[in-house]
Length: 242
Length: 105
Image (cartoon, rainbow over all chains, first blue to last red; front, side, top):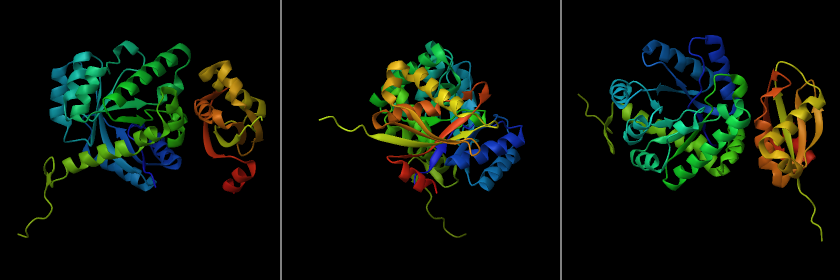
């Protein structure tokens, strides 16, 4: 059975009741793994608390941090400080130098771009080439597609369509996430794959953007964060008894 | 020879604190199709609200099988009926009403 993943469930961290409701709803809609963005300075016991709430609901929890650096220096400093603390690192690219640096850095898992400003969506062929070499994926949040109306939605669909086509030609993985703070904007994985037809993504590609690709990111990072990891392709299989 | 137009039946669940009249649901779906695909797209959809259960907030829609992806995307994009927030989920899709009811049991 396909294991569906929502790597960007923006459940409010402070509102425990809403958080629990959104997590339970995600399970009901068919997701089995959720990534919840956390503040960079989050305490470890809060993370464990979230993990417990998710496991009670039947979900696997992934800790995620959303970085919004103003310049490349800030990005590199944040990556150095936070990479080993979170299972998934996403960079919200607000400027071209940040987007380029994020695309070529192997510590970045997901690249996301501003919704409201199509001119600030820097995912072009140069960005895609860098991202394909560093294994970074393009993240598409579906909530703005549902909440925006008229001209803004038309521009957003057109930008995403262009980005998906570029990602496909450069073999950059695409991840589809909900990206919502409201439980009314949560949809089933099958519904998201139907919505993905708006930007010319065929259902099989949309399904892998909702399951295989995010799962592979999580698995890769969990392996890297485990104490048995030595280097890419090298890990401790067995230790000698002391 | 004119070929028979194949149909698809979609079982929907309307998620909201309010309950709505049949016309409201029908209008919301039609508006969503028109908003996303225009009047030309809507004319190809062959949309028809077959059943609506106000208490259970469930509906069955019929559409042309060629327009299924279009109708599915439109249903998913419904976020409001009137000014009340709603979410519409497609529970099942089937080629016959009988199979849809059988799967729902």
